[in-house]
Length: 193
Image: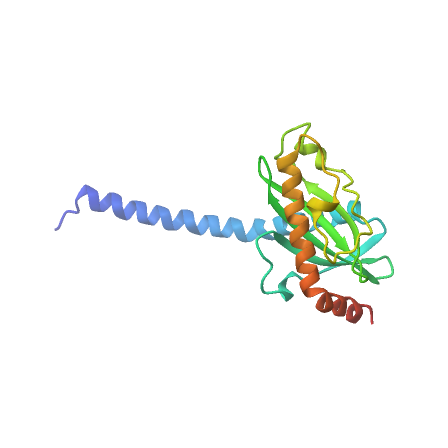
């Protein structure tokens, strides 16, 4: 009878333990992932309700675009309680002082900004960057053609890095909307037919 060395025994034991642990983690993930996704969708819905009063329906169209760039997380068509789609909303982000600053910016079919709201600045400095939540940049109703956040918006004094992050994300959304306006407006028209 051949005796296995201790090294070989421990190696086999660790491999088996790793396989069992990996299998358990995969099983747990298969149970928790749908719950996490559902909560994320609810969180986005809540943020959209806060930023765009009167809306009641959304359709995510992010997958319709190949190149979103580095600062665009998602694109939604947002509609009213009758199901009529009225606004194209971008969820954009950029790195601020302490982490990502997430902003929602909406455009109407006429090519004007409906609203721009910072949805998450929780990693920013309290009392400075965190003040972006609820801040009015005074860019509503501005045309998106030749728009530049840094030449048009009112930023918060003392929160330059956080405001720059919000502006970088907003400019990315404006740029993408300008480049894809015809496609997005066609999606809105088709969805409303």
